[in-house]
Image (cartoon, rainbow, N blue to C red):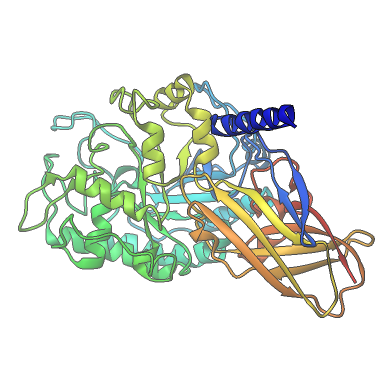
Length: 514
């Protein structure tokens, strides 16, 4: 008895001491346990990079009206990679292309039917290859040097006047609406070289000698009219990205709106309003303290142009929770700030501003540094959304006519959420004959900011045959034309869940229907 007590006390001491130790958490494999007639499955995360729609590194393309170069389906297929572009030390898998449509033949005339037909053929090729597009319509991407303050970018710049721009938007509108299923978002474009709303002959910001001056109230009103025309022509679930945060502020609140104008609220986010649909592209991410003018107050008729970096950066960061942020790097001289942390802030900036996509083809000097600095792999995986199953609780059986209850816990480790609403469905597939039954979850995938818990209570119809059914989660595109195409469904970041032939994610559980 004495020795038993001693041994018991020693055992209790060792057990208590061991519980206080900070042991590393092991990687949990796929497991399933039975609790009160329910099966609880814990899922293993997949750490690899793989393609998913509407997010990631995009591939750059362009075409000119004066010499239309149509897309090649073989090349589009190759972008799904992994593929390394010339000058890069990293490879990417891509489901997105960016495309300049350069309207250089139409600066003073309507867009020709030949151009519109070829553009539609490009859209068809994109759809056939399971890709999506970020289009930007511009009049010039060329610069000319001269005796002006900018030196290598001098007037005339070569864009079109407002009446021509508005005419072209009206022509393009039906094509953009008809192909909204494969357009991730539209970039405003039209104004200035590269469509960046800066070096322009008709919308202000420079005098005839190329001297940078504040925008006037009329300049703002003209730009607002162009943006209004675009928003009016497009379906109300498509966002339009503008180059500078201040344009959104003044579009919504007038030409005197201050840079302190608050961002949109979650209550109106993801809705059909103009406030919810105006997003941002940054074409000089971390190129300077102001990102080469991104965070500048461009003034108006009663106020001068001035820098307001901290306020506008915070504004765009807050907006990024609810609208699409994307763009490209353009200059490596702002180093080490544009390097990986801890020396730089590149990976932190992308998360804080909720970036969904970046250019895989430019600027390699910056992007290569991310590969060398060790953060490129994380950036590739985390641009946009990255959903992974964590745990699922499922019944082992259900009787027809009764309620099937289940819960699925999901983590989002990405920088952002999906750009559009999606159907989220539980799929039951008969193990014998492959017959499929689907049950929609009541959820908005755009609000899965960091995590989501899908709770289902589904009545099993009497027409469901008895038998065993595999369970799947299907995150399908909302557009019926592409909803059943697997490449347009979201793949979850878990091992052994993706079914490539259907676009379903396996939940690793079979239920018996009685």
